[in-house]
Image 1 (cartoon, rainbow, N blue to C red):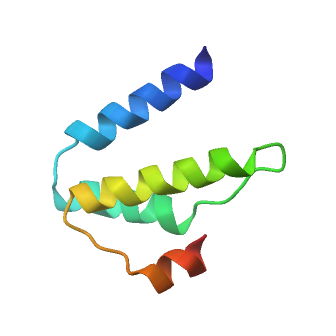
Image 2: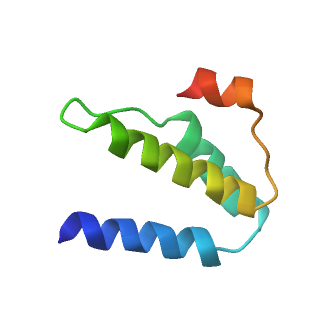
Length: 72
């Protein structure tokens, strides 16, 4: 239940967060410090990564494919 609540909250945050400079900076920081936990499933890691990218896309920040691959 906790994971579902967290995922829902993150999804709502992605959809309705403001597009301010501070928000873009927070999202970029999350992306650049994003790492996989040892006990985490790879598909969950990828899903979280895509959610971060979508959050940035919603704030008009584009990360090109090469940079995405390096960050992942």
